[in-house]
Length: 239
Ligand SMILES: Nc1ncnc2c1ncn2[C@@H]1O[C@H](COP(=O)(O)OP(=O)(O)O)[C@@H](O)[C@H]1O
Ligand SMILES: [Mg+2]
Image (tube, rainbow, N blue to C red; front, side, top):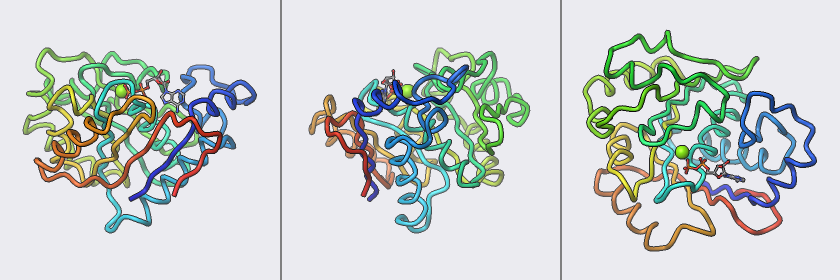
């Protein structure tokens, strides 16, 4: 099971000294702003773990965590970048229909997105955005958030879209809301090959981890790895 650990404090220090241009990107996109940073290296190690340590390599990966603000979207975005940097055709879908943030991380417009593809049957390819020049990274923001997120995610049309994008990309990453708060990630887990569970070293309780893993097990999901975010060590590594 891959486990990438990086220090929030060291990431912040690296941002201060790093010379990368962020312009439209959010500061959470360390793999673009400062690819030489230790945190960016941790993402590359996570990529290696996913590609080689898990058999067969998962193609569709759900990124979730027990609670809110534990780093799901940040990990999802940076993992997508490093996969694309390795030449893998990568798609990130913002499936967090409660608190969509991927468009902010990548500096994208969010007028239309995945919700429109599911609800209004808009062509998914027409809404793809490629935020990082020179990278085969495609991002689909959430779009207008629906009043009934769980029902929209549980729809036959989304299942069909996921089958479609599997053919088109090497990796599909699904960003999602917290497992401990809503049922949405459990629904998405049934479609994914594996789940990457994000934990916050300072916030996530053991009980929350137990509940999250139970929820995933209940729907037959496979946890392919955990990422512990916000560790207070001075090192950045993965194993
Ligand atoms: N390793 C990190 N170092 C510094 N800030 C981080 C790190 N991971 C997440 N954050 C910040 O924490 C906040 C919540 O992260 P986010 O990825 O949106 O969490 P979630 O998707 O779980 O709600 C954001 O402001 C993000 O920039
Ligand atoms: Mg998020």
